[in-house]
Amino acid sequence: MLTNERAAHAALDRARPALIRLAGESGTEDRAADLVELWDDTQSAMRALIGGSPLAGQALIHELRNRGLLSLDQAHALVSFAAVRERAERADYVPTTGDVDAARAAVMQLEAALATGTAPDAGHHTSGGPASHAPPATGPVSDPVAADAPAKSREVRRASTLGPVLAIAFIILVAAGFAWWVLGRGGSGLERGIAAYQRGDRLSARAAFAEAARDKPSEALPHVYLGRIAREEGDATTAARELEMAIRLEPGNALAQREMAAHLLAIGNYDLARRFYIRAIELDPTDRNAQGFLGCTMIRLGRVPEGMRFLQRAGQGSWSSCAMPPPMPAAPVQ
Image 1 (cartoon, helix red, strand yellow):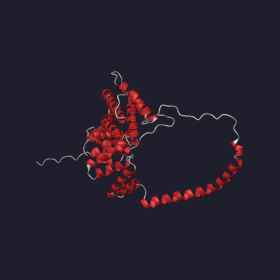
Image 2 (cartoon, one colour):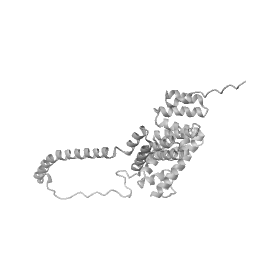
Image 3 (cartoon, one colour):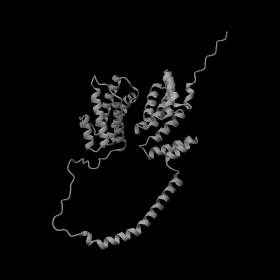
Image 4 (cartoon, one colour):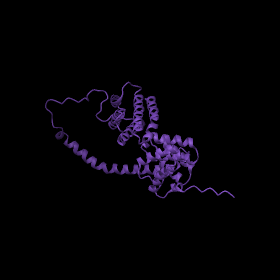
């Protein structure tokens, strides 16, 4: 199964350029083409997850569901995307933002299934057979309540005595465990990393975030901070690797999208930075940092009026300096 999951992840990685393009597209032809491309890569990932299959569309989703590899919500999201794909193939169809949202949600749901593994829902039987039930008893039955009344009375008295004692013991154990955690480890790796980063100790912060990434391999935030530290230190290769990992783990994490945009802005890839800032704002419309630096990015691309609108929306901040006009060249000496 591990090999299948790796192949599925690789197929979803191939889908990422189309997903990024959809975040900033308005042209109907381009949007339809990217929706079809994104579905094809998503379908390849589903086939890879079961080791290859000739099945397609809803039949493939149904097979994954029967094998317990998709939850009901995940299957529904993928079925909705399959319907979008069918509509997008029609020459007269105009894709909507709702279609884009359905596609994005389906990819996120499949990534969630790959990241965490999905057990079958309660009541979902993968064996195909009905659940067994014991046959009803027949013949006369004595009254067990009347027969066990004295024994039950003793049990009630014993429970009423033990209840407060067990509750006190539980509280003591919880307090002791919390004290060991706080005094012995100083909080989680993520908490210690953030504290170290805020006081400017990048070395300790990097070690703590690396520990947090090992302890919680499905969380994006440790990789977001590792990518930010690498960007601030000028290590573009490490920054890109950590931020790609963060987005793969949590595609819907607005901070991960914004940090990838900041990395791309720092290395001069303004057009791709613009798309990631737009994605971050879609996920968190209140993010003034993303709005401000999207304005800076637009100005770098020569789209000054649009850039100024985003800067005005963001208000004052560290991004405000990019609105300053470049210095005038000195007059030539006569």
